[in-house]
Image (cartoon, one colour):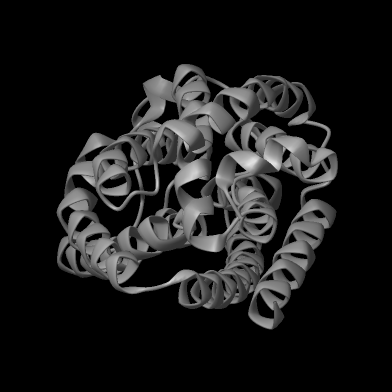
Length: 293
């Protein structure tokens, strides 16, 4: 299927527009929701080309996220991650150079299922940490404050005072932190290059590093803006981004903005647990659909 030919398919364009709006929503409200978007793009478009079409849409969402949370990034963490991420991006580029559409489609489906599993594991770990923190709170701090700290580490909706020293991670030792950065960085670079699916990996890393609410959002916003912009030359070189794909992006990127504003307006009203369940369920369905397609 020619990438631009989808513009004549009303149903396909409607699905892509909704997926683009969800990208904006996920960037300002619930991180990880755009795994649904990449499943939709890979289902409507040829799987390999879909990664190139989705990338500029993601960058538009990243710009909006940075404008919202730009002051809360923890740059030492970013600099520690970037070398390993670069290695992962190069490996992913080599994979895309070798793989045909069927292999990429299967890989995206498998990555989606893997990321759903990672998200479920993350939720379980967060609930365990919340229980532990609440127990510790009984000895001094209130259980409510402890719960808020864990919710912040999970990257939930922003709120409260502006960032500062409290945005810095309260995570593992320096040696373990460097090892974590290397492993998560390579995996995140590979998954984001192959399937634009680095979000769950990086979310898990930031949670493990002990980030609180605004630090999580600000650091992830800058991370994905820089990494996604860096991926553009690789995608152009692989033929994934070209005139036709950019024309389609021009029609889709306008839907990112209302999605971002809706997310910003609804962020305090979202039932986080229900929404995560819906995201995980849709991601699993999308992954299975791509594997069986």
